[in-house]
Length: 588
Ligand code: G6P
Image (cartoon, rainbow, N blue to C red; front, side):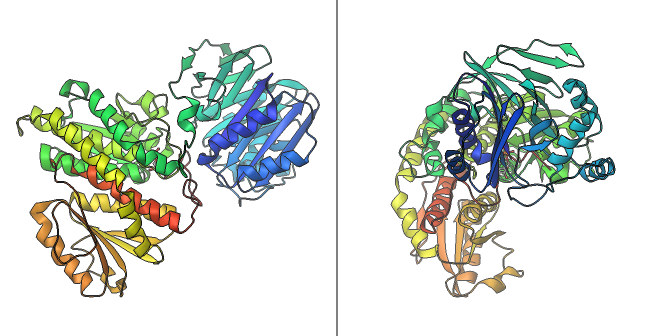
């Protein structure tokens, strides 16, 4: 959600900033801007739309000679996505870019307006900029501190001050890192912004203030200089390119086989994962696809391991009455580890002295750092806004947790896991190779306006993810229903040829779902079935090999992802950057 890059050093500044923005674009892309500073001069160039619009503009303008700059790509919170509201914002001596939300911006705006400040934009960021400028006399550190004391909300800030050849940066509840290489220093909201230039970075913690200058950097907290360790990332620049794929999303789906193998190799016995079977109750919390992965986890943990589970989206959990009256574990599931609501849910559990376990992809993220236990999924960098490979690995972790828990609880005798995994990997390979089949299905449905998904039990959870994937990248209205529930109202919307995608992997309730399929078929629906057994009399039936119940979702989800992809591709959608969405939602 919004991206920040700043640079001070010997490299070509506009190149570094634009390259950084392009690699951050997946975090938000409704407008962008840069500010270049040359002692007294600050040149600001902004554009609405994608980064390529800003890039075009930069080519037409004479840029000042500068080696200090900050840049931003925006996902609108306060104010429309237009040029006025794009960052950087400038008030008096201060120019800044901001990720996050200032919750008391209206109050502060009124106060500053009374002091004579005239605002040009509708943003909370300009208010914060004006507040820092208001307190700025000659000491920027003290102005930043005074201003931030009055602020409620979240922020990651990169700040330029006139006549001061440095970049200042500070954060609260929104990530920020300092990048280091031999030619200069970077500030960035995400490692992908700087990975082309360096893999060395420092993670800033809450309210640590960094000052980047030509030859050094200083980090202070409460006016005291602090030393922090420099980390290096394993992510390389190549891994964040599209290779020969048309879209990142397709590349990321195709990586699933190799990543699954890696996951199986890492978590290869019960000691490689935390033993969750000792808990009486598990709360699984996440947002979007992460929550849907949690729903798959809930079914597996309840049905297979006899552990009581409760799943809730983080934005509800954080404000709801929660009964912590049993020995409870809260599992936070998040690809980025930075989703604001999921962080808040984690902190709520911790305040209640409840154990927390993070299932995350980004190892340096807030959730990874603050939770008691962690399981890292090894998805690498996921660039497409709609998650695919990370979701698949999240459900794999739940499969393994459920499998090992049921062994710990003596519910299940160990199976030959290595053999089963080999089997799964070879089936997955086959499934991924059958793109043509999904394309043929997509051709039959891509012009429809409504598409429904139905399934029971674990299949319903998969339907939710399939439906979300489809709507977010193709903009076709889609809903997922428990197969038995559709007839209680929504069946009224089934017309001739309305696509209904049904999933039947659980043979125990297959007949029940089949009856529901008949109900929609008799109303004219165009039924597409994904099942583990061939269903006669249905032309559109994708049959998936039957494997152990623990792992069955792994073979179904890539099919739903690829159908969504092919549909969106046929509709010429901007698949990697769907409208209105952001990859990492760092605001409430
Ligand atoms: C956004 C993304 C989704 C993702 C959700 C949670 O909405 O577009 O793909 O599932 O955030 O993100 P997280 O990083 O916490 O998994």
